[in-house]
Amino acid sequence: MENRILFLFFIVGTLSSCREEFSSSYSNESIKIDTLIFYSENEIIDLGEDGEFLVSSDMSDDASSYFIFNLEKRLLYTLDLKSNKLLSTLKMPSEGPDGIGDWLIDFQRLDDQNFIAQGDNVFYFINQEGKLLDKTRVDHLFYLNPELAKKFPNVGFLYKDGQFHFSTVEMGKIESQVLSYNPKSDSYLLREIPFNDLIKNWSMVSMVKSFTFYSSPSFVINDFPGGILVVNRGLPNMTAFLNNGDTVSTKPKSSKFFEDLVPVKEIFRAKNETEEKEFKKELEKRMNFLRPVVDEKNEKLYRLGYRLASDGISYDTYLFEYDLNLTLTRETQLEGIKIKPKKMFLGDSIFYLAASFEDEPGLLIFRNPL
Image (cartoon, rainbow, N blue to C red):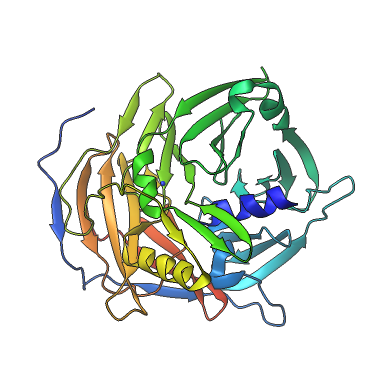
């Protein structure tokens, strides 16, 4: 149990030439933003603290259904974008033939009927009716391989082409790797993640309540054409590992909206809860990023950034466009969005931002403003 508590605190805490077509605008006030709020009538949709479970939400390919997974209570909500109503709530058991454990850290939609939940060294394949279809354990990797002996899987996995991709880390350290596991051959590939020094800017050692915790935002694995993309919510830097063995990373690029991070020498140490809260509030003033989305048809990648506004209450929101060489090409400020977004989706040049409206789930919807 102690290891799980430490793990939870850890995860709470992301080769080509530049193109001349880069453009930037300080604001985009002409963008039309529609707000869709879902209503559940007599049932409460439990989004967790500050809407935390909206991060583990997903949308159907045709943008007709929206899925929210409550990792703590194993609840799968299915909502309809046409009627703005809750269609169903599925409570999945922790034990029994369809049990998926009581410790879940991430969720991925495979299609509109099938999903994967990431548990404690195990991945559960489930369908919308709550039936456990299959499960894949990975704990033996960490028990049997010396290079993985002190590591553990982190939050933010991706299942693609029959392989599980997730970041691994050793408690108390910032060095992270991508582990790609093939269950059919029971083999894995371990690759180092760059930008580790920059993670110090977001890391904290907290010594409160007789415990010492090491907190740092984890790297998550995102889908990417011809490979996988490694991102961190606190970094503008991104790296793609391609299936052909190549690696593509973001290049230094002048941006109007985020500054290059200079690595700090020492990780911040919070001596009490007040210092811990103040540090986390300072992090809100820096640029935070959502997981990116890819427009494969137009060969573009989009990432949303946000930071606490000068009033200390609202947020300033920005949209960044990259080509598939991860070169920043365009950016703009979205003046009409002042609340903290949780996740972004893209379909037919329409963006959907998941957000919490007084504890009700909702979406901010707008067409590509770039």
